[in-house]
Image 1: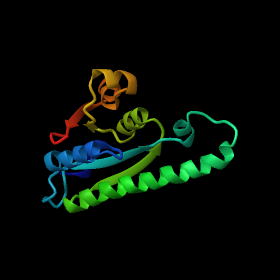
Image 2: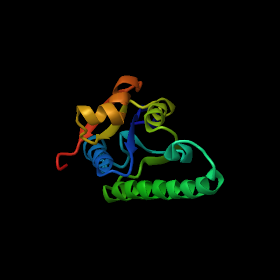
Image 3: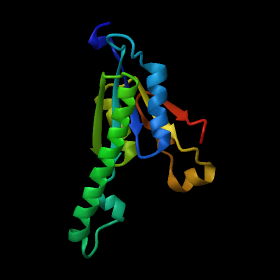
Image 4: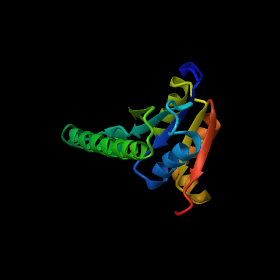
Length: 159
């Protein structure tokens, strides 16, 4: 199969076990690691929040706090992508690109779909009920309604 014929799958990851389970599911069910060249190109995307969004705004003393928050967020991004890389290596998946993009996770994932011409977006489900989804929002719900490709929401059966 020629490289231009490959299907592209974007998988969103975060700090949760739910997202790593979704990545594992995608690898186990969409990737064929035993083939010399997988028919699927995998993009794993982590949306790093901006320091200002974490603080909820900027006020007095922000010049002191913002660099600390930024450093912490970068460390989290490295930890998340390292876990995803380790999982991919353990499953012998090498045709994968990892990306860290700053911004709101919903927008980052939908933009990654467009950027990589993805045919599928895979996200994990945190299993929130209707009330929590109302107050916290649902990344998967947003992506289902706004992504320009099919969206697969993977539920972790052990959670």
